[in-house]
Length: 157
Image (cartoon, rainbow, N blue to C red; front, side, top):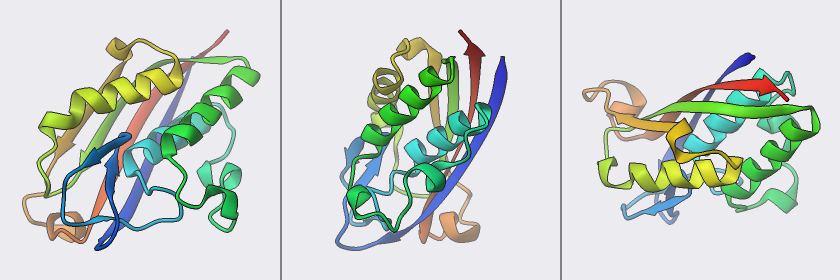
C-alpha cells in the first residue's frame, strides 16, 4: 500500500464557471486556470500520482499544451486512473477537503464524490469530500481563491 497527498489552489476571477469535483457550481466567479481549474480534482490527481511515484499533474498535463486548454479535469482524472492501472495500482480511497469561504458547498458534495468515484472506477463509499472555510483569514478566507487538499491510499494489484 502507498499513501499520497495533493494540494492545489487557483485564483477566483470573473467570466469563468466555477467547477469543483466536476460539478458546475452557481457562483459569480470561477477559477482561473489552463484547464477548467477544478482545484479538487487537481489535488486528487496529485495525491494519486504522488502515491505511485509518477510525478505531478504538471508533468503529465502541462499548462503550455493547448490540448489541455479548458479540458474537464474529470477527463484528466480518468487518464490518471489509467496511468495507475498501467503501473499495477488500484485506488483504495480518497479523502479531500475544499477550502473556500464562499460559496457554500454542502449541497454539491454528494455529486462531487460520485464524479470522483466514477472517474476512478471505485465505489462512492471510498470517496470522502469535505468543505471548510478559513474564518475570513488568508486568500481563501478573503474570497481571492479556492484551495483543496487530498490524501489517497493505493495498493499494488
